[in-house]
Image 1 (tube, rainbow, N blue to C red):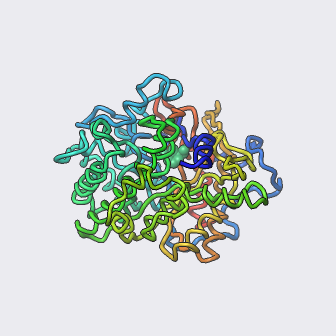
Image 2: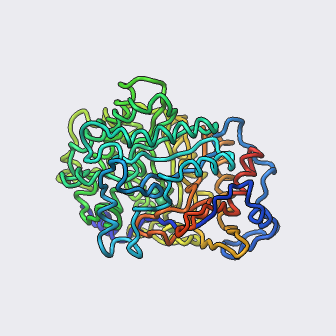
Image 3: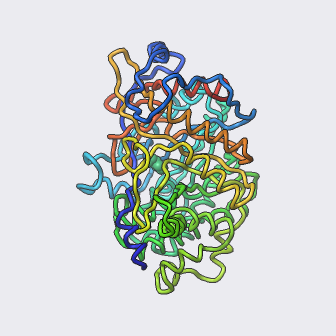
Length: 498
Ligand code: IFM
């Protein structure tokens, strides 16, 4: 592995997230105090320079097309709780979060936002928001406790009830098959370092498609393979907590292979569901105008973006990344004839998750250009949304895109009057939606946008400290309280734009 790669691996900021807690059973319509707070807010927490006259207010000039999918997203381990119920098996995140020192405050997803028991209330919240699309994930260990064999009907039944509840409320389900909660039993057999796990994933996907395929119009295969690779296997901040670059890129290949096998499983199962990958993409910019920075940025982009996009959409791994890894790397040695054809099985759409840009120095390190959110890895740069969306369309053609995650953690607190004023989130979402709108005006076939996240939740290694939700969760009581941003987003949806 090259020096540049090594340095990059060492300096790469950790991508990890948050969640927190608290709130009320009152729906959006019922939270008059929160609505009243819409009138006057303190934006001082958002420290970016801005024109003080530019208050984001829905109903302005930026209209999205009729039928645009206004959505919000969650994932199973981050919200469901019910860790030991109805036959659910252990996942790598159960193991990891229960290991002392791995997660802030020793938090676990055992209870999380208790969505498993409160999903009806959460469905009603979604309806009150006016969501047209809800992106959630299916917990593999709920469906197959040990990751293999006959499916657990009680696990599938939960998702059937959730999906039926979405349809009853006019909300389109978008289901992710894997959002990091690998069954621990499969980890014990090598996890994603084992090629066999890709086949196990295809079998699991097949069970899910046969049970739920008639009711889910859009499937996503693997959430952010890059985060599993980087956080799970390079930096060790996420489950399974390894720090092994050689293993990391073999894992990347197996995750991509698993994606392709799942796409094929959906085609084999029949039906008219659409499917695609879910990539967190980072626009990479040179930190200065030197040729060295340009060159280093190109390779950085290869590891961040092209490794996943190129293999899934063109059937080739980027030559510069393969050369940097070297022919003796475990990944390169692990690629077999026919793998790239599987990985690049045609998909129906690509899900883009955008949070932050990356600025790369000639030495292959990174620098900050913009203020960060509470997540120190996240620089706030809405133009990056435009850049990454237009780049995917330019480089890979007019395949339909969906933004399946965009958001930030803000220091939300529940005020005495029962409101949560997250003005920074409103500004952030306004500016990123405006950038997405601009990309659409320039030809990007973007069909939907999902805020991360619907609810405050378990933000992985950050536990419940960071709050990413439109809806505040008061963890001691599990009350849901729509934040000011939830009211704002409801109005955006109702207006069809900004
Ligand atoms: O919370 C995570 C999510 O699980 C995957 N994408 C990034 C989010 C924020 O860190």
